[in-house]
Length: 149
Image: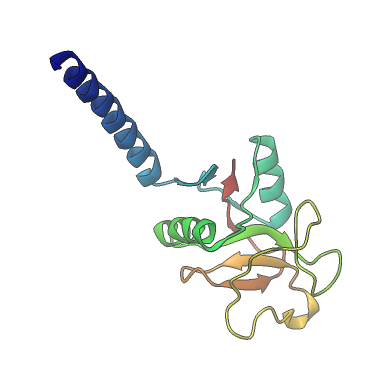
């Protein structure tokens, strides 16, 4: 019937609006959405501890990718800003055992060839290059903030 057809078009219109809204959010320069997670940057740069604190104050945590899609979203922000980022991953507690901020062992990694190498014995944090590959780095270095919510 005509009524059912109109109803279908209205539903389609709402769906199109929702898709457009999602597309805008996904394409927004300082953020990416993957599944239930939103990855965002404010453009701030700081050392690992200051980044961790700022994400926490914002109600999130330092970006901690658990799969390739999440890593790719972070990589897109790195490419856009042309600045490496620190992840919420480190081996501060036990050298060579990389964990998330909650202490859990990482379930995903994307290390650059011959990394992590703990160069000079001082590399406990993890940065992401524009290639999406990871490198261990000194936590005192300054990197771009990317938080996850």
